[in-house]
Amino acid sequence: MPPRPTHPGQPPKPPFRPLRHILTWTLRGLVLLSLGYLLAVAVLGAMPRPTEGLPSPACCLPGSAVRNATEQRNGTTVPIPPESSGTPGSPGDENAGVTEAVTRNAPPVTIHVISNGVHADIVLPARVEGEPGLADVLGLDGGTGGANDGPPAPAALPGKAHVAIGWGAREFYLATPTWDRMRPGVALRALALAPAALHVEVMPGPPLPDAETRILHLSRQGYRNLVAFVAASLRRDAEGRPVRIPVTPENGGTGYGPGSLFLEATGRFSPLRTCNTWAADALAAAGVRTPVWTPLPHFLLYHLPATDR
Image (cartoon, rainbow, N blue to C red; front, side, top):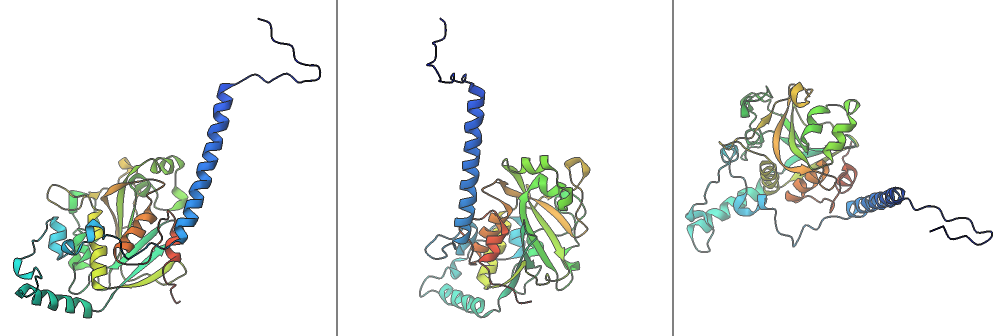
């Protein structure tokens, strides 16, 4: 059938091109999705997360608070004896009251939140008197999982040693010790539900205060909840020990230094679940004011008290 003639002066109708039509609407959808993502980052990042009336994270319920370093290291749970159950009028009620009073009167634990502008780490003391040792919880014994050499054993750590902890995409972590060595392909794969890892770095002391550092003073229960959150983020071997990840050229690793190591972690990295949302969740478990949601460190620091320099 011959084409219908157009009216005089009317330009001919352009031919329908399905591929061009699909690409146009795909690009429009990506633009709208990006704008929506940025809007959510701005709105939810500026909103403080409610701290009252919400259930505690599973890691941090009163009955599952960290009791000692051995329990965390072995991945076991120490049952609460009947005499300390806290039933009114029972001996356990008196013991629980004494324990609660000691905890309430104990000095707070000072921690730090540091940022490099893209990624936030939480820095905790390696040891806190009367509390589970974070070095033991993380398995800093020089040989956990039979992997690479790592930081010294807990007994050899300096008295003021601190541990910086961060969560992120496993492959990206291993292959990117510095930003100038970032590879676009690795970065893109990290956004596609990449397996996660914990990065642990032993520091001789607390970080120096600067514009990207926040100093927090946690109650003893808040500190225990934070340690429990970190412990719950670890993948463990058949014997309940954290599993170290060897940093080798075969798995893309380039090495971060003698005080640094990587541990297998739970969860997967994505645009909705980033290193900074993990840090926000960890701090929220400790009772710290955090944003509702943020994939960036800027809003995380925004809700924390500024550090005097």
